[in-house]
Image 1 (tube, rainbow, N blue to C red):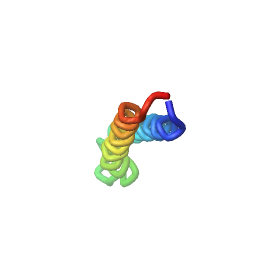
Image 2: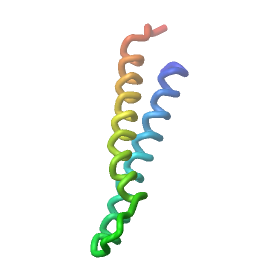
Image 3: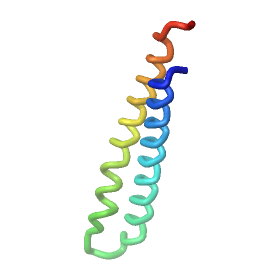
Image 4: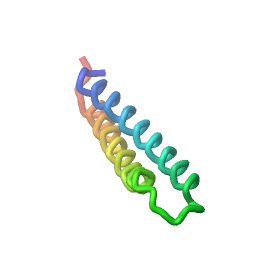
Length: 74
């Protein structure tokens, strides 16, 4: 693996993990305040931003895979 591939892989793992944490925190925050009439802005933001962060991580993972496949072996 080249250094670029390693860096893209690490970024992908970090983004996917951060997106999963955002989704779980948003879900917990939303369920904790579901019976109250006021809005939980942080949970709403986490539920909206989580899938986008995971998707960005998947884009980095795809680019890491394509970079790995297209580099020449020495």
